[in-house]
Length: 130
Image (cartoon, rainbow, N blue to C red):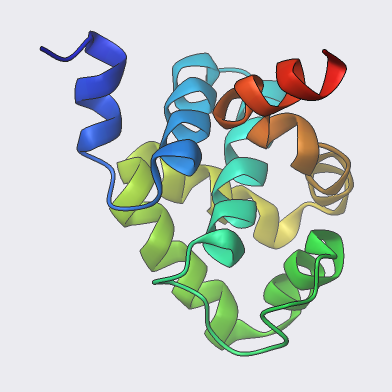
């Protein structure tokens, strides 16, 4: 028996932790700040999901530099858009597309990478805090 969240997560073709973060960010999407979280979550998931990793140093933990690189290289940006369509549908593609011409949005998104992934890793944060 799956919860509503579990059913949503099962539809997204990536790791369940990343899918949880994407579902939560997608639920909140609506105004610009919430789209920033969705874009950040999808961009971070693009590099963390083993099936979608493309190019670059896969062991580099610096997501900010990876996302900046993705925004500067059209082949990576296109791959991220395809990933966004798979995991976030039209809402995900729109969130990623907004980044292409908006430096302020990119800056907000880069500073939101960790926050955007938090819903998928709540148990680990609680465990760490004790």
